[in-house]
Amino acid sequence: MIQIHEVSKRYGNREALAALSLQINAGEVTLLLGANGAGKSTLLRCLLGITDFEGTVRVDGLDPLVAGRTVRALVGYMPQTCGLHPDLSVEQTIHLYADIRQVARDRCAPLLKDAGLDDHVNVNVADLSGGLRQRLGFALALLADPRILILDEPTSSLDAASRDWLAATLRTLAADGCTVLVSTHAGQELLAAGDRRLVLEDGRLVSDTGEWSGASEPATTGSRGAAPGSVRPLIRKELSDALGNRWLMSYAVALAVLGVAAASTSVQSSSGLALQAFGRTTATLMNLCLLLSPLVAVLMGASSIAGERERGTLEHLLAQPITRSGLLLAKHTGLLLSLTLATTVGFVPAGVLVAWNAGPGVLGHYLLFPAIAALVGAAMAAVGLLVSVSSRSAAQSQGAGISLWFAFVLLYDLILMGSLAVNGMSVEFLSAALLANPVDAARVLGVLSLEPDLYLLGPAGAYLAAQFSRGGATALLLGALAFWATAPFVLAVVRFRLRTPRVRRSVRVQPIVSSGEVKVS
Image (tube, helix red, strand yellow):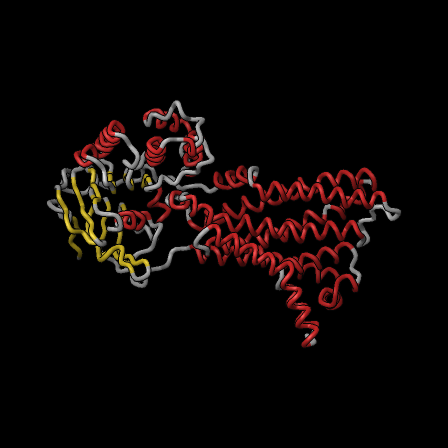
């Protein structure tokens, strides 16, 4: 059962819901009707706890803003746009969501067969017709055998026969005690299946027709379908997606080609490789790390959440029994693993050349470069993730990511050196500024590890080495990179979380079974 008391929601100056109070009962199909913009979809998101609101909602006695993960484990949800990843096949899609909800995969095939999709399991979602995508979305909503089913425009793109099938399925679920709430503009097939019709207008309930056909006491859902969700499948998906990411593949290829070119040049020179010395080879490899890795990391981080939002898949992911911070952690973890893997693969050809010509003893120094690339990549990926959750569109996030890369890699030093020439800044200030830039911190860390020459370290790096010793300066620089890898991520979590309502009144709701109204005491 779902209880709603004086729920309000605003988007800027627009009031989507206005002190709405009603009750949705178990064992019946409740239809939510109204024109576009009436507040139907907003209400459904409030019930799932994926948007904030003022007022009180109880789903099986639980507050979705407090126990959202548990509520979403109880609910099967189908968003208006289905929110499916177009690059996955039908089978891959249902397996992904089964793994997230920790449902046995042997449940997937019967659901696909019931939805008429058993002959399309290897077809990509992008190649399905609109009606088949809707059927797949409905199958996903039924994965955990939920006792509460919330559907947003499920009949969109369905033909008459499919609407008949959907209506019959909903009636069967309601007869089994399921709470069914459907936002719809459907034809007569679905309207005839409804026990009750609620009409919203400008966020207000203007009509409530139909009576509860269940028992005198409202049913409770119990714990059926309440398994917690897992983010591990999302990490695996991030890694899988990375294999087809043009930025990451181009990055690995560029590292391989330029790294081999730099190592080959040194092989042909009289000085050989001599990676311990800061020569042409080491300078080239260092520049590769500090230019390419931050760019790819910040762009991939910037597209993570903004890309899901633009594809329409973010709402469906948020409706799963996972937390927002868990989703961000999965994105960040998958991004770091894929970036580290691409960096390692990119450096392998040059590493083989180095070992072949200079012997395996020099590989310890050579491995410094992929390590530095991974460290600075982790920092810039976190920055990109913060940009992603703060941007309104994927294009905006990509533009901001490129701007930040340019600022950290080039503009930062130009402004700092210009200010130094004009104002004569103290070396202490320069050292602080060095730690405030993850790219500069990684550069000095690399030089310090290879050859701690005071001239090569620069004034700020030399000051740190003199003040804290080589080991102390290394620890300080690693700490700065660790800060940059974690602080933007924490800020992204804070930025991405739901706003806490100003007032959360504790109310007890008593149902009046002869109507859709509620009594509050």
